[in-house]
Amino acid sequence: MEYKSVIVKKEGYIATIILNRPQALNSLNLDLMNDLPLALDEVSLDDKMRVLILTGAGRAFSAGGDIKEGGPERALAKMKPEMVRMTLRRGAQKICKRLAAIEIPTIAMMNGVAAGAGFDWAVTCDFRVGSEKSRFKVAFTSLAVVSPDGGLWQLPRLVGIEKAKELLFTDTMVEAEEAYKIGLLTKLVAHENLEKETMAFATKIAKGPPTAIKLAKLIVNKSAQHDLETSLEMAALAQAINLPSEDHEEGVQAFSQKREPVFRGV
Image (cartoon, rainbow, N blue to C red):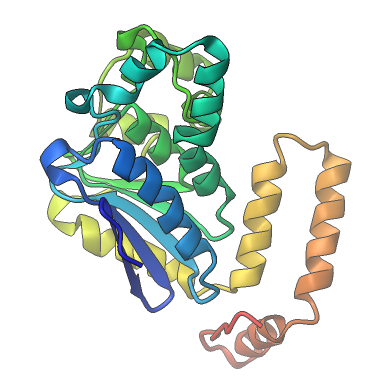
């Protein structure tokens, strides 16, 4: 499928979605708002894919709303409150929901600044691999608004409630070293090795048993909403799915034979 503002690449079991508005620091406009959910759906519906990498073209991951095109906040400011809510639910929030709902592991490759909506997309991914050029900024607070794109829900789960409030209230630019220290970055590597290290990380995950990994992700993501009993029940159901699988048998055989397993997702 052809898109105006994103590029979708597939290599083996790994899909990469590239935000492709480098001249505007991959900021969010109407084209990107329409294209990104469709690209996420394309990857999600491809049973061969086991890992998704999200990144930006050029020197930025994403700078958030495109101010030069008026920015989504300017258009929303002219609407009645109920229309604002409906527009966000049907528009920008679709991206957060699609990204959070993807069953396979997601990695944000932080090639540059992530601000505003870009910040929210990054923290919604399961992992973030960055370099010395990676920078994070909430950005919404400086415009006297709050994040509508999921960041308020995701950020405390990464850095804790107190640190999340600090970042939100002060709207400070977080440099790469600090981001790694507080948990915004999963891995911090040299910029010249960013793509190689991200792909190596994705490949390591992709070699694992895809069904077991999807189920583990689901249970972990739901754990904050469930009590222990519910989590145990979900784990028992997951085992009932995994134990009869060929992948489980392959894992047992590989362990016995002291070799690397080859999981086929069945």
